[in-house]
Length: 180
Image (cartoon, rainbow, N blue to C red; front, side):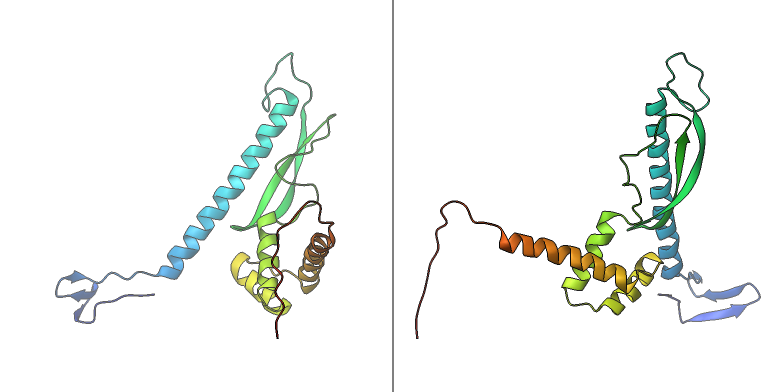
């Protein structure tokens, strides 16, 4: 949303109002900048956590020489993860002898669990699968396929059916009304 002052006089230096220069605020650019700051902060934080976890497994920091060291770094690989803040690139460390299985993100996971929950909630609220694709493109910058949404919903419907079919153990008070 841009705001400008109507009453002004044109000069060689630009528009000047009776009270001083006109200030324009482009809220779209500000929001885009804030979104990028949040996304990059999430990315930096997750990468720092991955490095700290590798340091803990090695019992030494990167390039640190110590007798208690259990392993050394063997490079890294990039992996993409879809978060609420947008897609982030994780630099996952590799170790020479020990397996590096992080507790931060599940292996082969492409989306944060809150993103999955949001997709399921949209569908259960009555948003069509195709519309969910459009919404994810607008929110996170990547389009989630219709088959992914359907797969997530099949999983949740399985859990709902499991809950409905569970045996009821114990005493439950109830009211039964019959009438014409």
